[in-house]
Length: 54
Image 1 (cartoon, rainbow, N blue to C red):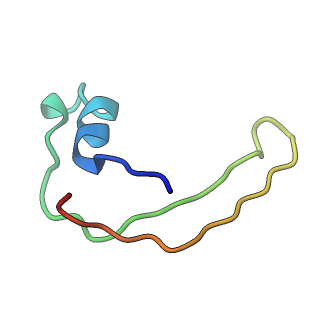
Image 2 (image 1 turned 90 degrees about the vertical axis):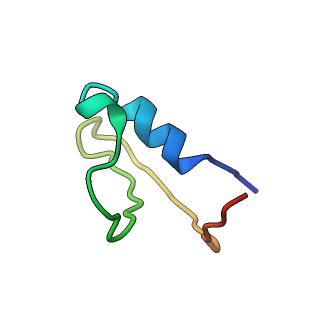
Image 3 (image 1 turned 45 degrees about the vertical axis):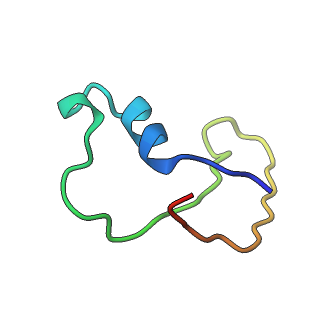
């Protein structure tokens, strides 16, 4: 099981845009895999995804 602090991850990834603070309400989450630019093969397996306060 993978646990992440999505808020802290967002702040770190987008720190150059208004200090990394989210702008408005989140409407959805996208999860994708992209091997097009590396021209390699890729495989993904996803299970249940849920969000909680802890």
